[in-house]
Length: 167
Image 1 (cartoon, rainbow, N blue to C red):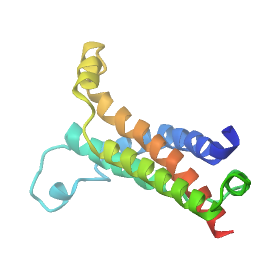
Image 2: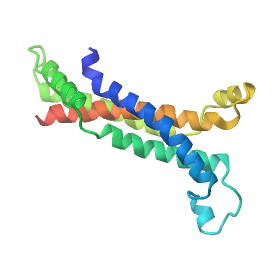
Image 3: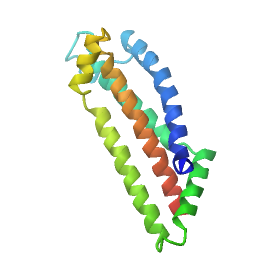
Image 4: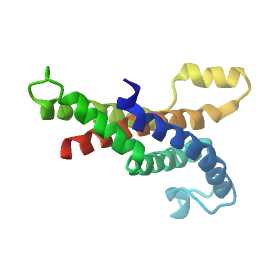
């Protein structure tokens, strides 16, 4: 069963590493003023970027990176696509292409759901928990990073299902 989702698990590991590497770089670039929000660049706001602005820039960075990781071709993607195709062509499935298409739709819905969660603010209880433990607003950075890992996991598996459907 794990072989059916191998591409997603490997992509999730890559996304975890990407989140760990991208976060300090983007935060440093924003603090140096090399990345500014649209309102600051148009002259509407001359104050330093708030935590909310930083969080939205980082969220979009995570989602763009997750798109790239999910669409990356590798041997794990091919292996997962082969297993999806083999399982869908078992004798108790009368329409194997319909099975693969249904799996593709479900995986795309999962990736879309995680994308929408990443674009939302973190749940209040997590923010309160962060302030209780003295982490401050770091939850607003951890939340989209975690949700982007879900996006890439479902997205890479959807990519494998699409590949299996095309073969």
